[in-house]
Amino acid sequence: MTTQNAWPENVIARYLTVGGATVDLFEESGYYIPTPPTQTRAHCNGCGKEQTEEWGFSIGAHEYGREQPAEFDTNGQWATPRAHRWAQSHAETCRAIPKPA
Image 1 (spheres, one colour):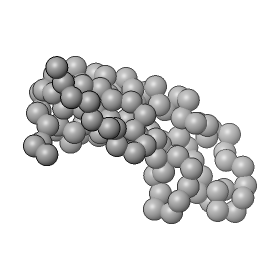
Image 2 (cartoon, rainbow, N blue to C red):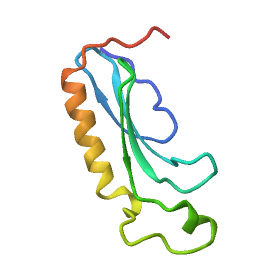
Image 3 (cartoon, rainbow, N blue to C red):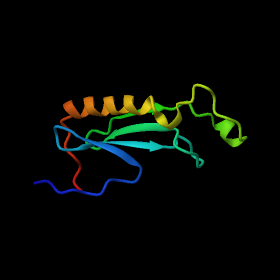
């Protein structure tokens, strides 16, 4: 039986690797200043590999109160599934074991 740990903040999904580590998916701001989420990032807690899918957010539009460009992926509806596919594929093959706590 495995123990369930609380997920880190902003994690929206987790995949278990063959080595026993996790690949976590985050929706987060890709900027140093506070913004709404602008990207979906997958991070492997075993080997450290990452995949980031940008949503096409315009920081200039955000700062000046303008609408986001037409290509902005609202709520990551296209980017997030791509990050899920990468995380699943990576988890199926990554043999790195998690670092001890």
